[in-house]
Amino acid sequence: MAKATTAAAKLLLSPQDHTLILIDFQSQMAFPLRSMDVALLRNNVALVAQGAAGFKVPTVVTTVAAASFSGPLFPEVPAAFPDATVYDRTSMNSWEDSQITGQVNAIGKARIVLAGLWTSVCIVGPALSALEQGFEVYVITDACGDVSDEAHERAVTRMVQAGAYPITSLQYLLELQRDWARGETYGLTTGIARSHAGGYGLGIQYAKSMFGGEEGH
Image (cartoon, rainbow, N blue to C red; front, side, top):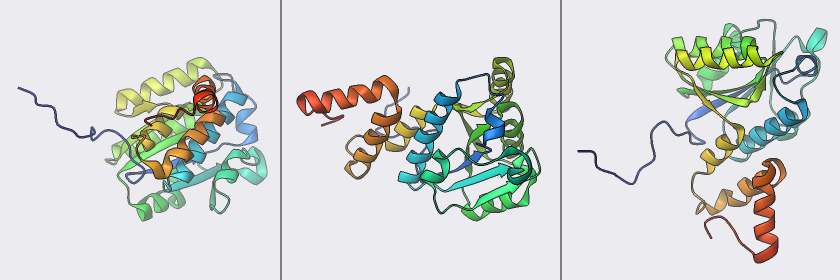
């Protein structure tokens, strides 16, 4: 008979157990986006990037053909990681670039969290490659986008069938916090949520303004 114990599932993420890879959040990659609104994508990218930076998650930032074709990063990424080295590639699959795999190995985490453009190319490639090499892979699906709904959805399905775990941007942030009693990151988490978590963020603002309410307090 199963017995409940006071412990988190091993599949839940923590700030210390994974590497976040932000892939090709660049102007040219966003222009043909059709699977989601670009403004919403930028909002979700900001939420993920600010959360990862605040929780000190090891993060790799990569671009493809930045100078010759794809252009600069969304400003939300360097705003969160102003000192990050940006690894520019020619390969569509970042796992085929030794700069990226070298950083993954140097960081040394067995879990990879991916977000980027496009889902069906630059996210599928590293997701399947990392899974085949024994990594656990999580994909922040609402911080990814593609040229059509079909392309995005088929890519997510393909990755899930291969063993990847789909999550959302707000889920990622709240999974890093996990417990509202963690006071050292409470202000960070609720501050990001107020700015980028839509109606939930407005609810946090309302509760605080109207009656001094706080999550878990």
